Structure formats: structure tokens, C-alpha cells
Length: 249
Length: 249
Image 1 (tube, rainbow over the protein chains, first blue to last red):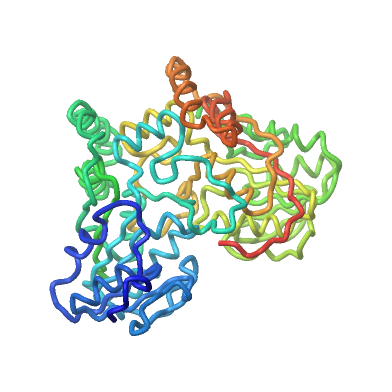
Image 2 (cartoon, rainbow over the protein chains, first blue to last red):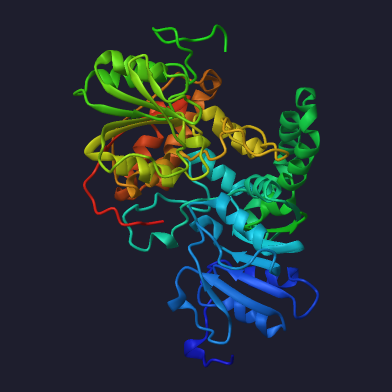
């Protein structure tokens, strides 16, 4: 577990501070069981293991994984995660969702393998920050995949083929027995500050006007939950969405 | 919606206005052959295709088996492997279906599999990139074809647009699944996009700048087409191309 520099697992996210932020969100009890889904070379796996957690890893390409002492589960994350039901206190998936075709199945599996009361931590590029919305408004692409993708690339799985937004994450968490308990980001975007100052009241009014109409009264609790997370500072200004869910049933 | 729209044979039309007519115009010009119409709804399109001389299998989740109105009926789920042999159809029509599926890309691969090489897929789906939808997305974080959160107190009914793909994403997944886009069109003009027409000039400028590389010029052209700036649904015809269909997720 102390590999030399050359063979130490690297983290391949280009955004800073995702890993340190996620580390602060892990369960308080040392020894808690954590599953790192989409572990890559095992960079985060090692960070968590060094902090005393029991960590297991899961990814599509076992040959990339560099930590011999850590249990590794090979899996096509669009299909299933080969570990028993309710077997982890915390499931972490860093910068994985946007690479998967099948968000629904993936989220169902994440909730299945988490214990009731356990934590799910997901990170993905934020497509609903004000700058990302502005880019979508101007030319139809979000900041998750800002340029057309080449469909014939061999390493297609490295592309951000399937951006996902906070309301979609919230929908899938709730659908499979979870709830959203926290929203964080790796950093607040400078380019979001001035538009936030100028636009925030209008964004609040626009969303409230759409979701809190009397004719949607039956859906009011659901819409209030969405308002809370949609208007969250991390959602409107953050570069990376770091969503924390909990399995409730 | 105003008065209920029906096909010439009196079957209610569920799709966006002018979709049915445009799709029939396409089929009217092509050599007759075997068509899989899925999801067929109440069978408006299937009936007219049969009247044009096509041999039609009309399939949906809730159709009874048997032969009615000139089309053979089948019960099937686009979320599962299709019960047909490889290359058993000359055409497939998937009108306003793909946005209801949890795994749209798997469905595209299945449609590609049951089409013969050179066969055609006609696909239509809501256009989330028309001007009013972009304005709505900027202000509320939801686009026009799914303007509110989905209810999570029950599983999706199948009628929700749970998996809307932007036109660039849909084009990407079509090409990855073994299709080449041959032509596109739009259904009716979205009236609420018309007052935003003045945005077309700055959007054209921003799009050309963002997608200035030669490799992206086709994407820029499509994004700036009248169909995508004003159209309610995006209609595509694609050819099944001869390619080794490696299982690529």
C-alpha cells in the first residue's frame, strides 16, 4: 500500500479539489465500508483507505487498477454492480455518471448496494450553473460536453456522453429509495459571480412561478425539494456537482 | 391543443402536429418493404403505411396481438431485446418514443440490429433546443418538453419524457449505434419561440464562434437550422450503415 511514485494511482479528473471535498463528506466512523465505483487507477480508493476506511473498488477495466491489497469488482456499470445488497455504508462515484449510457440502472444499483441509512456521494460536471446554462442558451452544449463528440472514437468511454443535472439525480435517488441530503461543489466559478448578483432574484421568481402554481398543488412537496436544490449556491455557481444522498428504505 | 387531431382513417394522432404528415411523405417516396412501427400507439401511422403498400408490424407495450387495419400487431417493449431476427426489416419508425425510454441507446442498437444494412430508421423526438426552450432552460433549469420535476411517488407511467436527448446527443448516439443521418425536418413551429426570433442573430454568432473548427461546421449548421431554432419536434431519417457492430457501451 505504499507504491513508489511511478506506480502510484493517479486521479484523472482535470478539476481541482474534488477528492479533498469528497473526503470531508465520508462517514465519521473509521472502519466504515466504502465502495469506490468507477475507481480508475484507485487514486481516491487509496486516499480513503489511508484514512482507515475499509474500501473496495469497482470499475470496468481491472488492468488500470493499481492497488493489489484492495478488493476489486469488475463491472459494466451500465448493467450491474456485482456486490450484495446493502453491503456498504457509503458508496462514492467520482466523475462517472457522465460517461454512462444507463443512468437509471446505475443509480438503482448504487442504492441497492448501500445500507439503509448509508450515504451515496456522486460527482459530475454541473450543467446547471449559470455559465453552463448561458452556453446551452447560446449554442446548445453544456459545460459537461462543450463540443461535439466524435462517435467513432475507440476510447468513447472517456467522453462525456451523457450529462446529468441535479433534478435528474434527485429524481433517480428518490425513485430508488433515497433522498438528497446535501449539495456541494469543488469550487465556485468566478464567471458565475456577477450573473448571480444580477440574475438570482429572477431565477428564484421564474422557478417559483413555474413550480408553485396552484394547479400543481398536489406536487408541492416534490417541487419544494427541487426548488431547494435547484436554487442552491452549489448548483447555480459550482463547477462540479457533488451530490450527497442517503438511502432511506 | 384545440380540436383532437385524427389521421385520415380516424385514428387519434398523439405526435406533435405535422409529424405524421412529414413521416408519411417520406415513406411515400421510398420503395415499399417491411416496416416495424414502434411505438405504434393506436396505430394511426401503421394503418396509413399499410394503405401505402408497406407490410407493417405495429408494436407497442399495450397492443393486442393479431392483424387489424392491414398491419400485424405485436406486443413489445423497446426496453428489452426485440423479438425479431437480425436484418428482418427494411424500415423502422420510432415516432415520439425514444424520449420515454430509460435506455434509449440500447433501443437504438436493437432497432439497428433488426434493420437490414441500408435500411432506414425514421425517428422523431421533442426538440429541446428551440428558442423558447433555451430561454426556459436558462431561467428555470428545465427545458420545454419536461418543464417540471417527475413525480417519484410512483414508478414512471411510460408517458413521461424521462430521457430527453438534445439533438447533438441524439445524433451522436445514432452514429455510435450504426446509423448515418440522411435527412432532418421539424414538426410544427413553436409559437412561443417566434417572439424570441431576434435572438437568432446573436445565437448564430456565438454558435459559429464556439464551433469554429472545420470538423464542427456540420454541427453548427444543424444547430442554426430553422428546424432546431423553431421546431417542436425533430424528425430524422437515417440509414443503417454496414459496420461491425461491436458491443460498445
